[in-house]
Amino acid sequence: MNIKIVCVGKLKEKYFKDAIAEYKKRLSRFAKVSIVQVPDEKAPEKFSAAEDERVKQIEGERILSKIKDKEYVYVTAIKGKQRSSEEFAKEIQNLATYGHSDITFVIGGSLGTSNAVNKRGDDLISFGKLTMPHQLMRVVLIEQIYRAFMINSGSPYHK
Image (tube, rainbow, N blue to C red; front, side, top):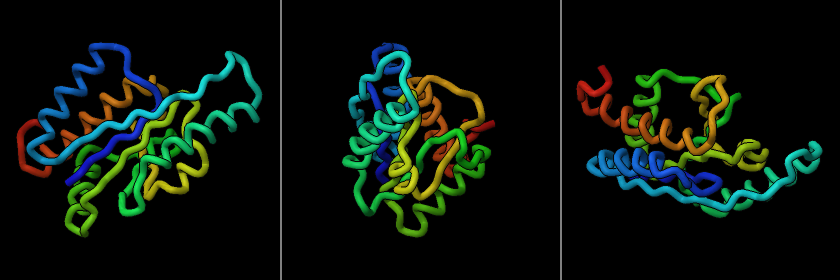
């Protein structure tokens, strides 16, 4: 299985990089994991709703350029469907069973994702109503992907 995480912006904090590297290493026995970073669009401190949409559109085009037609795409979104870890694990297992060997997860920038990215997504996934930095979301997401594989393998990690 191939897992790709497409995200906006670069990670600067070493502790986030270290955590992601650790989970990538752990996941390597189950899947090939790649993280693709696209540049974030610079925006002024205060800007209009139109400027907000323009930034999301530009970042969205960058995201979409990294997604292939055959990939099953989850887009992280506050308005997405919340799942338990067990439900998420079952979904990953079902995708693999039914021929989806390429799964892509999208984490938008600080403004979220464009309508075009949301429409391209096969599913919108939420990790709760809390707002968190998109850099931290990378760590949360990759840990949950690892947890899903551990649940599916019958490991006590989830306990």
